[in-house]
Length: 302
Image 1: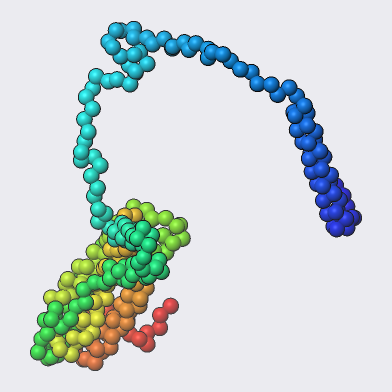
Image 2: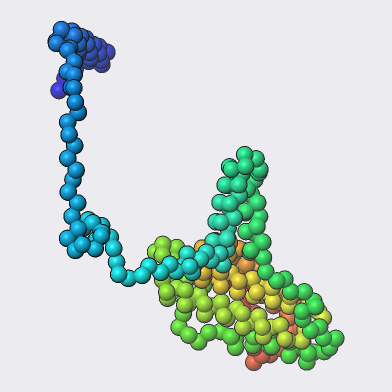
């Protein structure tokens, strides 16, 4: 190796070598061309083309089919299954989105006109947002009671707490937060993860259904609807996450909403406590409605 030399000197030296090599190559090529021109360039003329000899064809079994073709023959009839190649449109959001996106791209490319790729992608995203929508419950979906007596309020508070407690799973499973954290940490989804998520989704669904049939004193209608809608949202979120293997686009949409919906659950439970707390004398420590005291806004939490 060369040490201590200026880089410009080394560069000039290498360029010089290249120039010399190219000049030598060009000189050699010129000499070869000259030699070829000096050689005898006479053309050989043939009066008659040589006779052609046919390749022997064998038919050892005398069946009229040449031996080399026998290996391609079969005694089995060839039956074409017309249903084998039948196209089945995808029934997942991921599959439908992929096909629609590709069709729009190709249509624009072939026809030479149409929406830009940016517009196609934007429209696809907007359509996906519709897939993340779900039913929003309103006053028409619940039973409003005109009874606002102390007993009615007490019964309502206990019924709302029982809807939560009665549907709490007794199966040994992790919480939804723990499951999603584990998935993120190990960067994979197992069958156990899916099973645990399905259990939690069912808890939200059952709690929703039990809450829907509880008669609601008019004073509690807003807080009641808030809880119902957040139960419903979390059911769809968790249920959508379980589709991660077969319909990952749905999972992506639901995960994006999950944190906001969990925050909504915390706020809805807190609001339910606050409206029940306006009737402190209707409840005792033995009432299951005391469950909502865990969501008091001034409660010190770790």
